[in-house]
Length: 190
Image 1 (cartoon, rainbow, N blue to C red):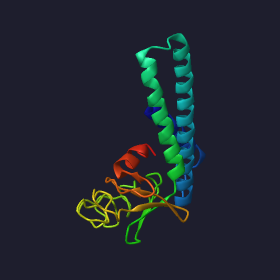
Image 2 (cartoon, rainbow, N blue to C red):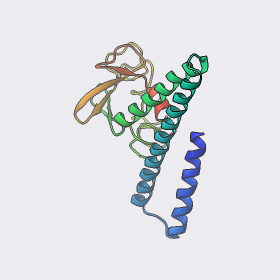
Image 3 (spheres, rainbow, N blue to C red):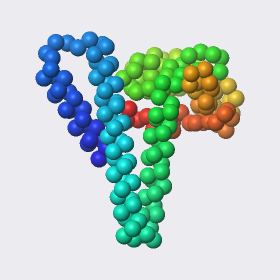
C-alpha cells in the first residue's frame, strides 16, 4: 500500500510540475522537487504508521488475546524503529578506517549518497563505493570493507563530528554496529 501511495504522490507531483512549467527545470529545481517528494513520502509513512497504530488499538479492544493482534505489535514497533533510524541517520557521513570519505546516508537522488547506484559512492563499479565487491572498501577480504566480518577497521558513520556507529557485518562495531545490508533495506524506498 505504501508503494501505491508513493506512486500516486509521485504522479501528482509530476503532473503539477508539468502543468506549472514547460521549460526544462534546473538541477536545483529538480533537487528541490526530489526533497519535497521525500518529505511527502515521510509524511505518508508517518500517517500510515499512525493508522496502523489506531487499527491495532481497535483490534486489541475487540480481541486482546488474538494471535494476529499480538503479532502486529512487533511489526508496528519495527516500522517505527525503521523510521527513527532513517530520520536519525539522514545526512550522516560514511568514513573509511583510513579516513577516506565514502559518501553520505541520503536518498538515492543525491549524487553523494551511498545508495545512489550511478554515483561515485553508491555504484557497484566505483572504487569509492562500499558496494564494489572487488574494491578496497567493498571486498569481503579487505579490512577496510564493512563486509569483512573480522575487521576492526570497518567504515564509521559520522554525524557532525561524532562517530555514532560502525558499518559492519561483523561483531566489532563501536559504539554500535549496523550491517550495510540492513541500512540499505531501511533506506530502500527513499
